[in-house]
Length: 238
Image: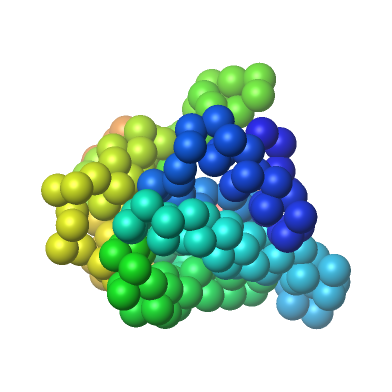
């Protein structure tokens, strides 16, 4: 049912309707979330900050509060929070979104301890770059470059199904001994150490253009001051 998770009344009604329809609540997936504008902090409005925190963090707290009350009645359940790798790895100008996802990471740990006596397990999934183009309304074709995919150790950007597959596990009885855990699903990106140097720039050019030799030549030019001086001069004359 249509619900604003930042509204306590909406959340109450949603949980009530779920119980009316199915008789009980066993599993909650806190997946509702919005992004932020990407503006520099000097231009970010307080209203934007509040709205992102309200939806992404307060919404998960509210849904957990009311769903957990129903789980207690049936002897337990499972809550899965969808955080983000932005909880522990950051891009510029993402303060509202990053703070909300970092808060969700911490909320998972607190809920796992608080709800443990009621046999309610709480875990968290932190997705990396997930291309949701085909799930939008209307669906869109993915607009990904070769570099978007190949920079991931897994050699591709993630899909919503990659996350859904993992959600099913901590929600199941097979995960009865797992609580308070955070699963990072990002194609290996947060384990890859990237330094900006001649080699990485050359590799990026080779990947984008499909020309390995060109990438090698560019890396060589960037590493030698005299070649770089001539290259700058050539570019300025274009």
